[in-house]
Length: 229
Image (cartoon, rainbow, N blue to C red):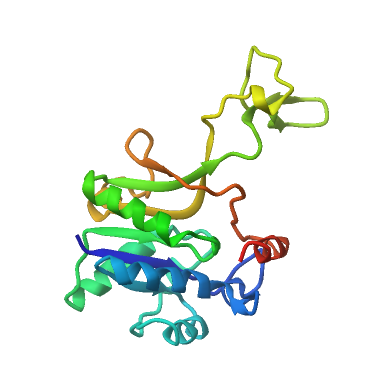
């Protein structure tokens, strides 16, 4: 089975300017996903592909991994662009260069704290059990029973209703998980059919050992991530 390790790295970002090249413990944010991709590449038959519309990001990535000169078209690089379109633009680009793939591994730069061992384990399960789609999940920190939706100052509701009065976390059910964005794996056929990496009742959750998921969207997230790198 041939994998494409897909790293999306758009140049523009709203929350943090030049986010992918912003330093996290002395290295640009995208460095950590590139290093993970290199480790995966040593153990799994795959190609690494960085999808970016930024020459600055592309030139930096070329110093870390072997890449071509592909730049993502502007029509797939806006705030409203669907990442699936970017993936298939990449697949079509690679086809013209004589490369084809059975499945995609999505590594988002915004999740820099990963366990390569867990990803390889997930890939082995994916291949052995002939899965169509997998995504990493970790146990939720905020229990659904404690989450409310506020409509205004007087109107609100519990996200998850419960007949029990639960005051201690030990009393909570323990089967709630969060799709943490650490990694996604799916076949090219699955992605083509569903236009998504995840589909209810079909995608298989891979439970990681994470206790604090890192997803960098704001400057404060960099500060949190620094303590885990």
